Length: 109
Length: 182
Image (cartoon, rainbow over all chains, first blue to last red; front, top):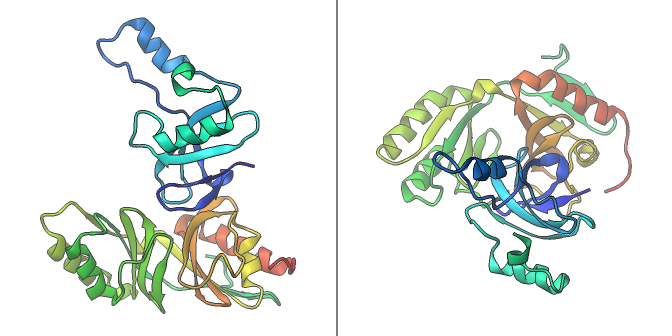
């Protein structure tokens, strides 16, 4: 069972209280972009075995969207942070780097 | 509503309460005008995240970083919304009467914590949840929110459309007997 701390209300929210929103930090390609970019934006996902950044909504709680960094194999949660950012904040990356030596955000994207 | 408005079991008494005045207020909770009008209406300060200041039928509950639930006696709602509209005119806010959209229940008794704990994914140990705190969460299959009126009494709000389900759920949880966890 996954328990994430909502960064807006501080609640330790059980997975059943949350709604999943898929991969985080996608770059949007809209009108005027090439068909390949638009297709990638719509359908191509990293789906990694390991560190993953995800969008979640605290659906049964405060209703806010937030982002979470976790490991898809161990379910270890590295941290959660507000959604108003285009890349993971420094303290999250440091936490991951300490626990997963050799992993880097740049190599992952 | 279920025909019986109150059901008693050794663990707790579950009561469906009558209509309660509720106003959803969205806006900048740090704004002094908003703080002042909330204080004037309820006598309470803006609660911290995850808290509520409810005395009897009147008070404020923290719903999200930009949303409060104002609780009042049902008859006072129209006047209260007029006051909010006057006080916050020109700022970005929303005040809506949601009284008719909500149902309120009271769970009172020595086993009240367990009645709630069996239904919600919330740590209700006395060290973790005490009177003054407020929690929006999932109760069985529906969204609900609750706070503690005193050490043995929970008040639960949910949508009126699922009030029958909520009443049955609380009743069955109380009837099923204690677990002895807390």
